[in-house]
Amino acid sequence: YIGDLARTIGGERVEVTVLAKGTDDPHFVVPKPSFLSKLRAADLLIVNGADLEVGFGPILIRQANNPKILSLETGLLDLSRFVTLREVPAVLSRAEGDVHPQGNPHFHLDPHHIPVLARAVSERLSALDHSGEGYYQGLLAGFLSRWSEKQAEWDRRLAPLKGKRVIEYHKLFYYFLSRYGFNQIGSIEPKPGIPPSARHLEGLAETAKQQGLDFLIQDLYHEAKSARYLSEKTGVPVTTLPHDVGAVPEATDLVMLFETIVKRLGR
Image 1: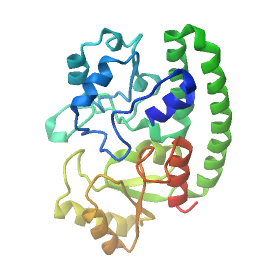
Image 2: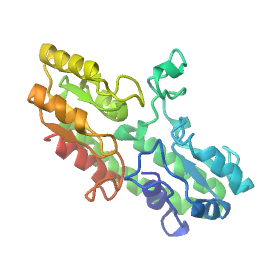
Image 3: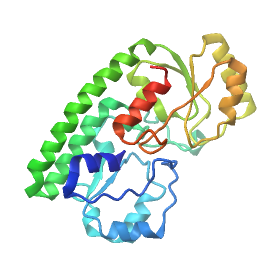
């Protein structure tokens, strides 16, 4: 999604290289030797932030030894600084799994956050390339106009799903589900990064039986066996949702990412 934002707002004045593909598990991107040469040549590095890239980002930045991408005020743009992060843990402990100390990092999956992120990209490009400021602002204005129309449409289509009960594997769609008022009654992961035990799955099946379950959401990079087991137990089909641009063939850009999510939820 970051690459799509950069291309949309930067247009012909930028050359965009994406290090993490949409099909990757964003927590565990495997660094390649080619990443270093790309980082050494970069004028701007845009990251999701909120420790999503903590497993590979900081060491790559150090090894690249490019002073341009070291400062958060110039060549390093951390998008997490422009939104209010949720699910900030009260206690930091390995017993709680692979927790993100700053909060849930999957904020891009709330479509209402995208205009904020687009403005942040435009402002940083303008700061680094003063002569292109008007160009970037023009592309931003066009994007925001199109996005506003689609966002209103998605809001309208998803309104009937408010209150629907959901179980997902990882709290990947937390911001999306919260935005549209879904009732998140459990996660297949008992804690972030911790695979479910048979006992935990039985507990989820019982919760679903007692409270009712409308959606069983699976992402594309965690194992799907547990979701299939719960589907058999509850009679609720598994709905597989893409998490990023390029995660599925039809999610060709940010608009189509959310369009695909909304359609797969039956709207």
